[in-house]
Image 1 (cartoon, one colour):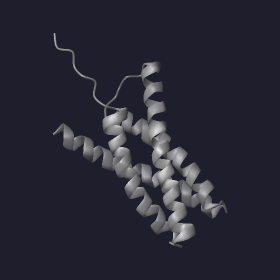
Image 2 (image 1 turned 45 degrees about the vertical axis):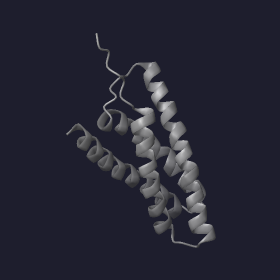
Image 3 (image 1 turned 135 degrees about the vertical axis):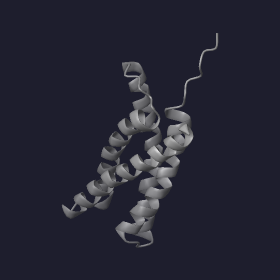
Image 4 (image 1 turned 60 degrees about the vertical axis):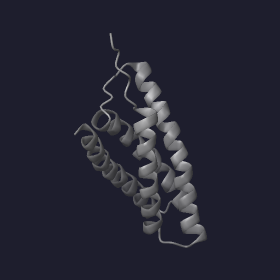
Amino acid sequence: MKKYREIVMYLVFGVLTTVVNYLVYFGCLQLGWDYRLSNALAWFLSVMFAFWTNKFFVFASDSMHRNTVMKELLLFYWYRGLSFILDMGGMILFISVLHWSDFWAKTVVQVVVILLNYVFSKWLIFKEKPQNIE
């Protein structure tokens, strides 16, 4: 049951993170910003939102010890940075090279990024600590 709860929560907060990303991205486009700058700001703000929701609500990593939080935050941004490279590369490919609409480019890229980020979060960032058996 815990496994399914985690997946459902990840999907719920993944959708909310995507909403944050879309709102910032398309809001910046409305202000006349370049799509690359809009995408970078949308990424940064949505990653911050995703970190806290993933930490507490998805993977239940409730430690607030400064060293633990900093390690998780740095790992989170590191792996999200890797997915950002894929995100930005996909956006440039789909918009500048293939001339897709912003909406479809963003949507396709986000699906791939969400799946990759789940793998990073589940197995590399918020992995369960082994229980001490005495």
